[in-house]
Each structure stands twice: as C-alpha cells, then as structure tokens.
Image (cartoon, rainbow, N blue to C red; front, side, top):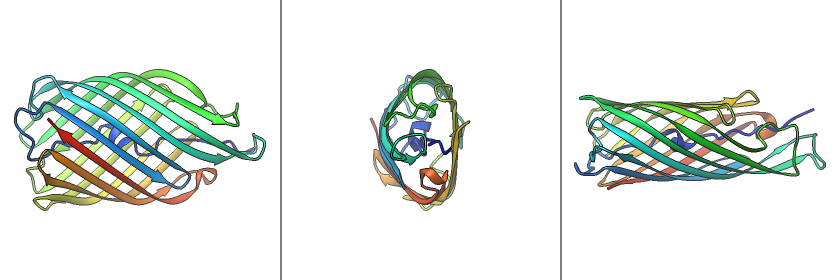
Length: 240
C-alpha cells in the first residue's frame, strides 16, 4: 500500500534561516524582514518572517528574536483513500530565540524555540502520520561568511520535533561585487519521507537595504510525490 508523504522542501531558505544581511545595510539596522515562494511538481508554498537583533545592529554580537510562518498546498497518490489522490494544505509557525556571534569574516547563529505544524488532508488519510496539528521544539544553526569577502559560504541545519523533521542546506559561491552565484545542495525529511535537491543560486547584493535571491535545479523525492522534478525558489528581504 502506498502512503503519501509530505515534506516542507525548501523552507525556507528561509524558514530555516537563509535570509542574508545586505552588504549595504545601514549600521543602525536591527531587523530583517523576508518573504518568498518555493515550487516543484505537486507542491508549492509561500512564507514570511522577521529576525530582530536586540543589539540594534545586524553585524554585532547579539541576542536574536525570530518568527516566521508558512502556507502551502500539495497533492500525492495513495491507495489508502478513495480515488487514490490526497490534496493537502500545510500551515506552520515558528517562534525562536537565539544568539549571533560575529567574527571578522563570518557569523555563527543559533536558535531554539517552539514550532507548530498543521496538515489538512482531503480526503483524510489516517495512515499519514503528518496529518493533524502538532506543537514541538525547534533548534537551528547557521554558519555564513561576510558579503565583503570574494567567496561566499552558507550552511544551515534545523530539526523540529513537531513532525520530527530535519532540514539542511549548503551554498557556496563567488562574490562578483553586486551578486553572488554558485551551487547549492539541500536535504530534508523525516521518518516517512525525504527529498534531496541540487541546483544553483543567484543572490543580488547591490540593492541597498533590499536583497533578492533566486535558485533552481533538480529535486528528487518519492514517486507518489512527483519523483524527479525541477524546483524553483524566490526570496525578497529588506533591513531597517
């Protein structure tokens, strides 16, 4: 019997913490706002969030407050329901506290807090353990190099107990003084499912207090979730 399995694929670049501080961000800026969209075969979602630096400066050592939310839709094939197809809506929300340690050429960030994740299925699939609402604890870590360097690297990893979901992404690129371009790799999943991505990203860093990141490439997941597919993401951020 085939059971559908859903994963939040690239959340987020952003819901996992992948917004960046613009090289032109003002010294007094203390908050990052970000929003984005992600799509691949049989699923899409959008998200919005904010990170506030209690020090009042994005580039200093600082305690952090973070909140973000996501909404998405997906479908999958399952012989456990009449008609063999399940349509799903997903909603999630995180509230995290953390700390940023600033070094001369890179930043380390760590977070911990609460998460909520809800999946509404039509028709209901009682064999899908992702169904329904759950609260849990979420932890996250990030290593990111400064955008003043010629080379760029960004590694993010998170784990949430609500659906026992892991998420990790690695980016590396070259900074062409106005944009950063390079490859990215992503893996996410839980006990029921997994997804792997391999692609490229383009980050525009010459937009003043705004930032724009685009990525796309190849995604591989369960056959009933679409199997191999192209994916694409778009994220906009601003600081103030």
